[in-house]
Length: 491
Ligand code: NAD
Image 1 (cartoon, rainbow, N blue to C red):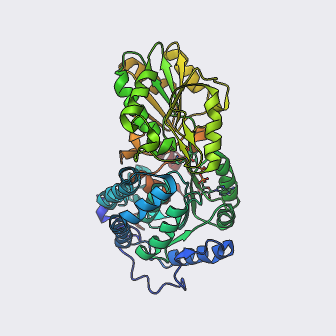
Image 2: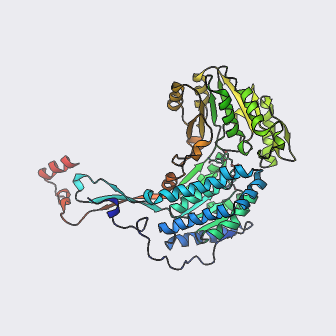
Image 3: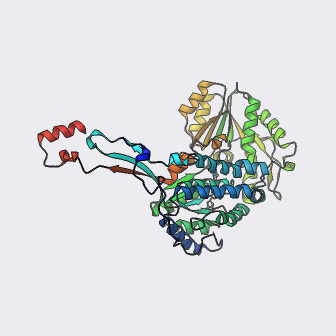
């Protein structure tokens, strides 16, 4: 029996195709003029043309692109960290751990495993079709559009790009206009590091994204809010283009008595207040079960991490813009402030804030907060906590802080969410083997590591049946009673 390495060579993964030859892509793409939505069709056409040459298919090419991106991130860490500080006031440590280093890890993980993950896979052939061989190959989809948001403007533009390149695609990256410094840095540096025929950066906002969505892509990968996701999916439907939607929502943290409340509070505060709460998987609110006094511990944790005056802390980020600042400060009146609440519009500073006695029908509890406000909602028992969660949209993440194995089993069995993590928020993203994605209103599809290769590849079915012996003759009409009996036996 052949092993997968004996399988016929395909143009993917097993052998590199012959030289792709000169690119017909004409002038190199590079960054697209941000003011020129009309430049979009030509830029996308160049990507399609580059894909057609086969340049992106060889594994060596893919790896060289990943390595080049890695080198760029290592050598220009200061450029990207400065841009992230300009856009969101991120500290150098946070910029590295949650953005630059995060993408480097993703690249390393793919480089270590992609040979194996992209290998053709043998599939058993039923006796009725023997002799024959069947296998699957992963082939690139073509040209992928990545639309990314402002909150992790580097990570959320580059992680999908890494997956799409590893799978052998050409990619148009559309960074968020609300993180303009990072967008400009990506537009300047990506074309220098990567093959600009295969990767284009299109800067801009609604006009440019709308122009991009007019074009036909082979996959659209969108990260952002659900309202724009509907626009993206509608536009993609016109071309029957598959979409991945990485969205958000209200991710609850269920805290039971009996757990170590001080540790739970520290970890919740860490997950909530990094990037000033502007994290899609941050705990949106706490469901405090019974008399778990988490508020006091949260107040202590905030003080430990950001000092008595978080406005003076270099480790605390800022709100992205005035619109979000005004939206967030309006939410402060939907509960009683236990800690924080200080804000300064000129500096776009909103202190880490814990609220209690919240109105569960108020905007604070109806909409995703996406900022440094943490409401604590008290529920009498785990049943009530589960009812609270399941009565709402399926969240991107659900967190459980409990010492009870039974409670863990119940949260797993009786709720649904993109991810479920016990004892720590946000950290599941850093487990490269775990898929990252939502369910229902929090998104569709998943990526990271091997899951990115699933998302950005087509798994093609291949069957190869030799000419002789022609066992299929039994299946050819005219049918006799004997043939019928044999066919029924093997079917
Ligand atoms: P955003 O405003 O940056 O928008 C995202 C992208 O959509 C941008 O590139 C933007 O240019 C584009 N866009 C905006 N309006 C558009 C329109 N009318 N037509 C076409 N394109 C348009 O980001 P956002 O939506 O404010 O992001 C915040 C949301 O994203 C939150 O809900 C958050 O939870 C979610 N999010 C999810 C993840 C995840 O990985 N699941 C990560 C980060 C953020």
